[in-house]
Image (cartoon, rainbow, N blue to C red; front, side, top):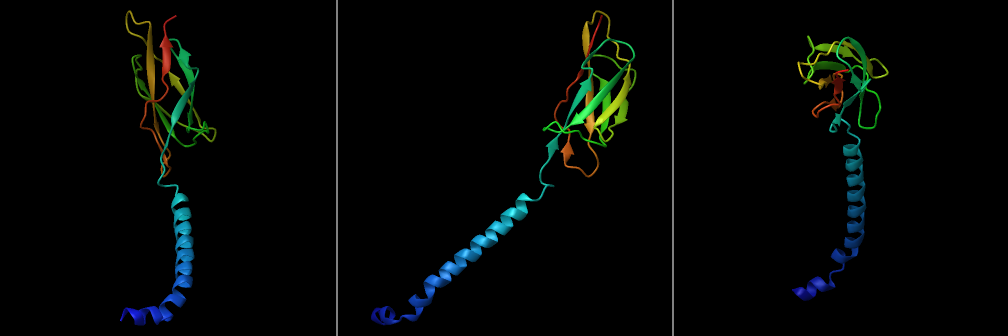
Length: 147
């Protein structure tokens, strides 16, 4: 019986070329799938941060420009910036929306408590709807120092 298999040349003759074709087709399919997966941007989430200008202010009324940026420093348009009391006190929560340059302007009146030399105003960002941005980490705060 084994002798008959060794003499049968049909199975051995077509096998190598079929293996080569299967390997080439498999590798081509794999490369198409990998390029499709790497092209999907919705699987990635990008963290945003704020850059207040000025970074340090005194108690009382002041105008603060807040730029929302991605990790590469590019501005993020249509994001909503929320300013809240941190260790410095604001009379109310202030919000503003960033323009095409990624900057929003807020009128703030931070105050410090008695015997308090410094405090912070905290910023949160509500990213644009439908974007891959998120704001889960702490952002840069505005430092308020007494004169």
